[in-house]
Amino acid sequence: MRKPFIAANWKMHKNVQESVEFVNAIKNKLPDPQKLEVGIAAQAFSLPSMIQAADDSGLKIIAQNASAEYSGPYTGEISLRGLADSGVSYVMLGHIERRRLFNEDNDTVNRKVLAALEMGVTPIICTDETMVQKEVNGEIHYVFQQLMSVLRGVSLDQIKNVVVSYEPSWAVGYGQHANPVLAEEGCRQIRRTIADNYTYEIADKIRILYGGSVNPDNVGQIMNKPNVDGVLIGRASLDVDNFLRMVNYSK
Ligand code: PEP
Image 1 (cartoon, rainbow, N blue to C red):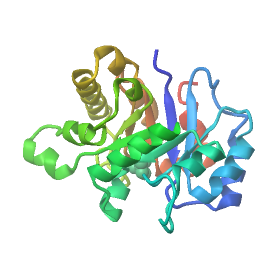
Image 2: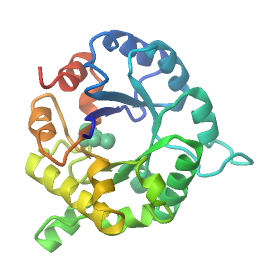
Image 3: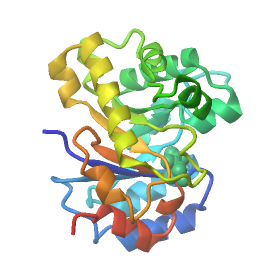
């Protein structure tokens, strides 16, 4: 049984005070953590204060990026060792904005995934497809090659500890309607790719999230799809009321 997971991606929004105020406003209104996991990916400087504010609410605090290097002369980078020490449970890796704006390629993301697994911080591996690929193929272009490149060297034992997110780049940040059928199809194909390259039993246990223009009006339809185990939410997660509506979508 895969536990659903709803995560906010705040990107470069909110300072420490705003982040802590948000956590304080939601932490007693979250669904039962045994039934649904809720997380927030925030800027690195806010993470320790948010962890403290979250207390024993079950809210997971997520980093948005990390270095593949353990430590050393890497000015400005965020180490996984430091994130693990601070109590950060998850790290998003390979988000479309990291790829598009900061030239991250599959090799870089692959090194980060291996480092996160080594440090015991669960990677949320972001995969994407472009509108061009979708239009040229006349069908959904799935992300098998990208996914398997970033999973290179991840063992049967380690693969159990990853979360994958499927975020078509044309749906992330542009406000295009997040179609639940496409979300399901993308997540289903990713699960099949994992089954083909690892085992069916493992693929059946891995959580696959959908991301791209999720909001309070469409979250229920998307979450109800059988292969969608959760959602990654950007813009709509910045507002307390919206976020609470989404994490409590089934009520
Ligand atoms: C994201 O940035 O991961 C995302 C899903 O953004 P949005 O919900 O704004 O499309």
